[in-house]
Length: 635
Image (tube, rainbow, N blue to C red; front, top):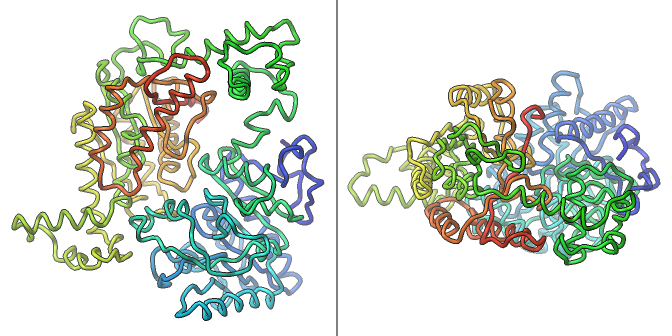
């Protein structure tokens, strides 16, 4: 794919894209092993611009984005300011967007976000930061403010570097599906997907503003240089669409294809659906490992709509896989080997089957029973992702400890806190509700943003979710004594998109791992957004394992809702009978306090995996929970 250093950021053109990628990618794409490295590269480009302009006695004009994606870049810029003397005295900034109707001090306003994430930590002048004004008494007043914002950008000489994220709907800024390429700064109605993704931040979908002000696509395209950043597997599909499919108003990010100096900067997870990574044999000659054959042949099965065992030589040739059968191989032998590979991922014994042949089983048979430790970033994650497997492990005699790394209180709806307060008052226990908490009841009733962040309110919400998780786990056969709640400080002192991990978080996880000393570990978040609770949790667990090596040869990553595994990525699939699927559904119904848990969607995902295996020609099951292996030495 070429090393990123082979391409300059200033003056890059479409011709610099490697020919072998150009057939698919219509825009330069840089892929990095992890988000931190990518963020450092972009921050270095910004710092280079700022310093060169300082030498010239000129201003640098930056277009800035919000959300979790640009935070690693902002933190690196702050580090450069404090440790390398990078000054922002000659920098003028223009933000992409702002929600309508939010006070500038609202926890989710982008004005406050930018102060907390960047402006308050560097020496940028107060009058040099610009964020769209989304307040106004009339449509005409808002229209005038939008026009004034456009004029201010022009008066500053235009934007030198524009940072972008990408939403699941493919939007850049808040240019939702349907935004024309000529659009300018304006008021927009937010897409349902966008509002759903923000619902946890606002304590529920109904609290998310319906409209916002955003720079238009046309405004963005006028920037001299554009970096679109994306981290985590949840963005992989829309990144592929924006980079590889024709321009379309349905995905506004696709219009970046016409920009002569735009590029996508991705971590490996966000790049995972690009043709060169997902189907590399279509792009270049490759080394045909056993795993790669499994990927290619399962793809051919889907492409031809045939089970694996029915593929013939012509199917291989027509799918671009003819080189698999030119050197003595034939479709029959390849089909059998691949079918068996998939078959060997299926096991009803997720902890290993005693006295069984280990060669063809995902998990080794010894020791038995095992001590399985299941890490859950937020308390409900493991129950949603692998609830039936937890029940199976218990039934098969393994010792199971479920570790909730955080309290999860940020996902608990305000209404649940109010409900508990009302119950206490009805029972004459109002004295149990502190005076400080009582002061927030009225604000909770109107979903006041600051009330949800009050420590006393968060403590109450933690208790609510903890009780529900205890109840849900008990339905799966896990007693309360087997549950651990760490309440890690990064979560308790932060909020979504604004978590700061400290030594205290690392020490707490490492201490627990050393104490439990498991020989079977489950966790999620290996390909999540690194700023999400799930991404942070995986990093903390991985660091703890590096510090205190466990006896297991690998750890198992279960599927989080933003990390759906494709069949070729699965190393262990645990069939779920109709009865166990019903049991899991019953357990998840006991989790009612959490915002956008989407339990039914999770149960349907379990069915979809089983259907995908069925389409490959394997046995048909009601549902499956699936896992990916991570070798301990590669953490």
